[in-house]
Structure formats: structure tokens, C-alpha cells
Image (cartoon, rainbow over all chains, first blue to last red; front, side):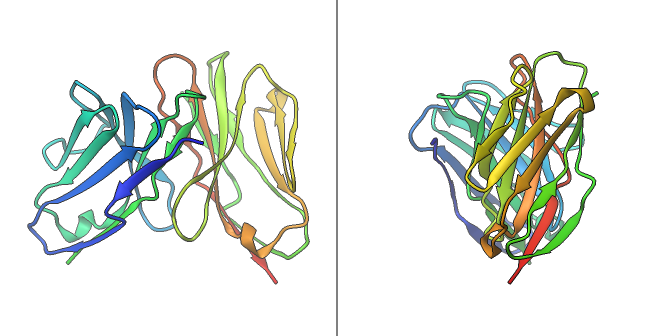
Amino acid sequence: GAVVSQHPSRVICKSGTSVKIECRSLDFQATTMFWYRQFPKKSLMLMATSNEGSKATYEQGVEKDKFLINHASLTLSTLTVTSAHPEDSSFYICSAPGTRSTDTQYFGPGTRLTVL
Amino acid sequence: AQKVTQAQTEISVVEKEDVTLDCVYETRDTTYYLFWYKQPPSGELVFLIRRNSFDEQNEISGRYSWNFQKSTSSFNFTITASQVVDSAVYFCALRGAGNNRKLIWGLGTSLAVNP
């Protein structure tokens, strides 16, 4: 099946710093990627849709300036949490539709962000 | 509007028991896709199955089986002879047809299989 990687898997940072999370499709190209946020014992919340070669589409209530998304190539999307605060601490997950079965999304292993 | 309901928040069973996880969906689309994902404690989401709206055939994969019934808008998931390794959160999701690939997620069912 399609493989999606995320880096880093875990990050701890100080309040006020920015953190970049990378999402890569390893064995397929992805013109679209999705970024989710998941709170403990909660469902996934879609934050934005990352589009290669164009601006990301953000869900209602998600701050564009806070969560910067860049889809640099057909295999890489990045999410930057700017000026992070403790309330940004969460589990961030990316996904990409596989090419063999374009209706199936394959997920990265997630990044656990802790802001002190 | 599209919606996915997983009414069971938590289920606890003893190993070797069979367990069914319920999923009820709402959509006005005639073409749509249903999914089940498993999220073990490690956090990584594992794809289990995809079913399109035109295929009501039930599916069995080892100890896993899925019962898709359009008449009741349900897509239930049964684990037969459960094992401790089945302990995880299971999510049901819905996606409409067309270019919009956003998934609509249920809240998940946390399954604990005890030895």
C-alpha cells in the first residue's frame, strides 16, 4: 500500500517558537494532502487541504497565519505552527490519497507536539 | 449534510469474544464511499476497508467482517474471536463523490480486549 511519512514524530518546544512538520508520500505522488489535528480521545479534525502549486484550503475556524501550509512538491507538504502556545499542543496527522485507489487516504504516523 | 455516527464510545470485551462496532451514516449523495480505520495506541491510522455505495456485498477478511446495509445506512464492523492486539480506537468515515476528497469522521469507538 501507499506509504506516508511524517517528521518529526515527536517535538517539544518552548512557547513562542515555530515548529515545522513534514509530510511525505514515499512511493507515490500526491497533488493533495490533508492535515488533521487530534485531541486526546477525540476524533480527527480536518485543519486544511494542501494543494500542490496553489494555496491551501483551510477549514472554518483554522487560523491561516497560525498554521502555515506549503505544498512544495508532489511528494512533500509542510505544516508550520507559528508562535506556538501550549494550547497548540496536540497530535497532528497528515494524509494523502493513494494513486492506486484514489478514494482511499493513507495516513502518516502523526506528530505529537508539546508546547511548554 | 453528511454525518457519521458511532454510537458506542467504548467497548470492553474479553479475549475470544466477538464484537460488533456500529456505524450509521447520513448523506444525500447517491455515490459515496465508506471507510474503517484502526488507530492503535501508537497513534498511526491503519486503513482497514473501503466500500463504495454501489457495492453492498459484505466482506470478510480473516477475523474481520463488514456488513453494509444501505436500507439502514449502516456499515457495521465485526471482529470475530477478538484478541488483545485488536485493542484500539476504530473510526468509521464517509466521503462523497467528486473531487472533494474530504472525509467525514465518526467520533470513534475505543475497543479494549482484555486477556
